[in-house]
Length: 376
Length: 172
Image (cartoon, rainbow over all chains, first blue to last red; front, top):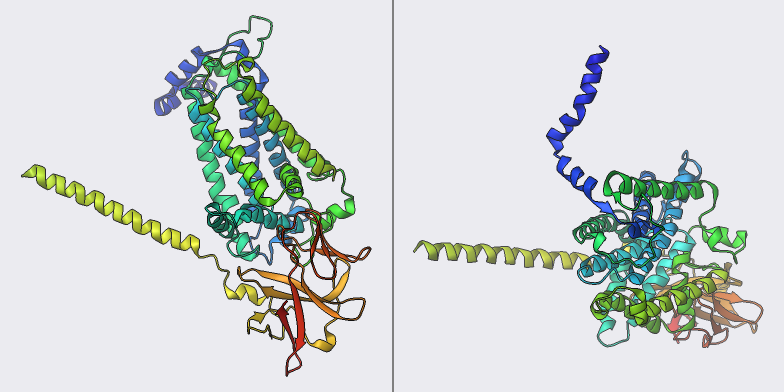
């Protein structure tokens, strides 16, 4: 009897191989070695972003099972799932923490890519897909905040759409910006029709788009063999673990880091209110007002957006909207053009000081504006 | 001869595909472009008594707007007055408020900030409208921009009574 079971178990790999045919792929992965300089954790940041995104998808599906996408019932359904559904509050908080940590992972990942010059030939395509991913993720974060139909989300959507449409008076961009604003809102201003649009974007279109872009991004990374990335960071002291096989050692390490990241997100979701750490200047009372049902006749005195949009909001306090829109447009254009402007052969940051400095400047400006806004 | 037939059929097939794509694209664009909210959504915003401005445009009200009661209790960030809705020429339905100022005069003003569409609140301390989103400040007397990023003043309205005793709001 035991011998039969043992025989069956031993036969399983062969059974699977017959049907999946993965052995050649696994052999290739086993024989590929990862050099020491690529074993630095900064090369895992993209995987961590993916881990955060997958957490968002799983928690998002669980939330969508209870959420009602109608202006009449949205707020009530969110209250119900937060306070009445078992572990509902945990799922919701984890969803919000995952979005915050996703932003951090993406920013650090982009920083590593820019400093290391990893967008250079032949990896321009990978970079451009990455920029599209950035835009898609930002839009997903923006549309998600309206869904609870709270004061915070309602006015955030209004300000965001107003910002998009603020070029309304400019000659060529004006009509396009206005059409984009009205198309985003589904009408002349934020209302129940906007909820339908944002819900469809946030739950259906953007996850599909992001999933496809991630697949393309990972495919391109594999196509261009990371081992040809020149070392930028000093390798660790040489050891017998200098060359690790891609499978199983390296990939399992990456997987372990991803799981640890998800565990961190879940821990934060269980223990820490997702908004309070990013709103130190806000009293508990004012914070509670932001989560009240949307009231178009009354904007809370201490209204503020999610922390990752705070930098932009702060900019809007300082310059006219069309100037802020111009700045953002130029930044996006700069990101897209980067691999085609930075044409030098050597990816080392010391040989590319203007570009690295420009990236550093943008990052510092964003951090300063964000801190200004967060401190209130 | 067969080459010519094949060529023709190939051309016809591509042409049909292109025509189908154009047709589907036009239909899709038409769908996406229809964004005017159905009037039934605006039902919820409609009040008991229709009020018209001088051009006959319907001013949607949230409560009865009859002059003797025009200073009933809709508190807005410190101001107490009657909230009304008006439709601007971009088609947006925006909130306004009718208040009695310190001299006892009725003033009607838009309370939608002209910067990025938040609702302004009344600051009792200095008698001004202040927007909490990006710190815009407007005069409490005539809605002029005094501080901050708003590009335009708050739309003011004048009130008059029509022959049925109903308040008529006119753009000032």
